[in-house]
Image (cartoon, rainbow, N blue to C red; front, side, top):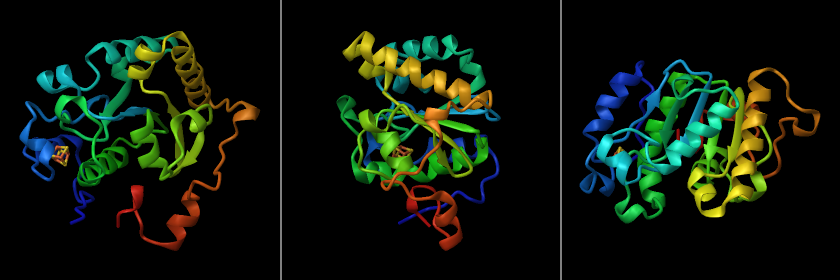
Length: 222
Ligand code: SF4
């Protein structure tokens, strides 16, 4: 059953609800709900996949090796951890760090939806396939989607690789993330490079059209 948190006006209140959430089986194995961290008035929001072991133990997203790399790469473009808001597609750790299942993503996405609405960033960075496919509502993979700032719900969305992929894939992947984060910097500074004009390709739904034509919300739920 689709749930809406549209009536919740405060991130802290939403976080309290999530803390006792049993909407999907991931609740059974978690130590902590990893709801999100950072500035709730941030101009930039980062959306990852799901908590790993260290995140599950500490209740904070991106505190392991991937998190340290993310923090370092954000710093290179002048963004401190406290300047951004960080959340994941699923708030509870999948067992053995497996990929989140479609039903789990479906159950958890109302939290992410409301987080984005309440933080109201001007740029959303999606890390890896799960967050990118969910938010852009596409089956296209991250390798093809990255490198572009997409116009999305009255803001911009910049997809890039998950830092875990950089830890596995080495300098080439890390440099691609660097390049995407420089694009984020350009968007924040109001300098969209001419080759990176926001665009909606045919895998994307035009946000304005959709808003006009229906009451559908982010990710398609009503
Ligand atoms: S992953 Fe999301 S929907 Fe599932 S139990 Fe955790 S907070 Fe609830």
